Amino acid sequence: MANEEKEKQEAPEEKSPATEPEAKAPAKEESAKVEAPKEEAKKKGKKEKAEKKPKPSAKKKKSKRRSIAEGDVHIQASYNNTIITVTEPNGDVISWATAGSSGFKGARKATPYAAQISAENALQKAKIHGIERVHVYIKGVGSGREQAMRGITANQVELLSITDVTSMPHNGCRKKKRRRV
Image (tube, rainbow, N blue to C red; front, side):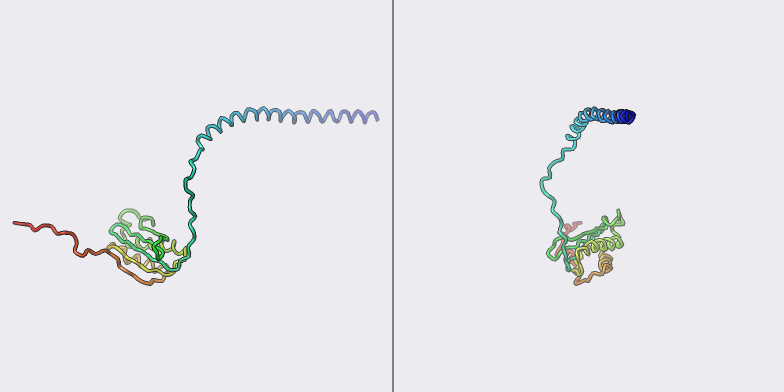
């Protein structure tokens, strides 16, 4: 029995040195924690000055998903570019595309192929909103007029009407004065 009592007394002594390093380790961490807040405070002070963001003055409006079956397609074909705009019947723009936004640059924007691709891109964006039937309004004298129409029909959209709204001069500009010889 005396041996057992000695073992019991020795056993706790053996555990205590094992627990002491664990107790010392947190003490080191505590001293590191004391130093860390000072460093963090310095870093935070610099970050806080840099991270100050201006307050947004107006909240952004969420765009509501419209479901429109019928709309208008406006094609403006100039000598340098072709612009396709898909609108609601009241004139609100649903989607648009140009030869430039479709990936063409320079003189290639004026080609009929670029007009066709931009018309297809504009109608694919509009189909997300449910466009099925369109009235087409063509304006301008560019080479992309006819091909843009083919791009519209390629998207399985029903054409209700095609209207040419190219502006025409009634009498034009004033003529040059007659040359006197």
